[in-house]
Length: 81
Image (tube, rainbow, N blue to C red; front, side, top):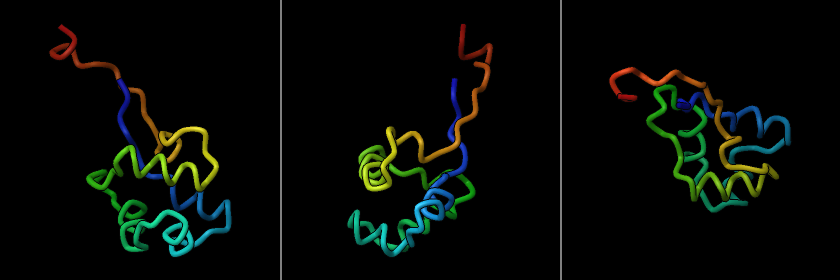
């Protein structure tokens, strides 16, 4: 089982020397929405797969899953029975 972690978008934009505004222009998403994904600490703002695919394409990522950190978690006994 995997648990989604922190959004890697801030680091990816920095690596590519892109601003949130520029990513917004290239994807059609507002700078404020992009900022929400970057800054959301409660994981409530995990972007939908369609949006992640669009952003991954613009950033040259192989997979939209590369936009997030992932943690492997052992399944709970209650859910595995």
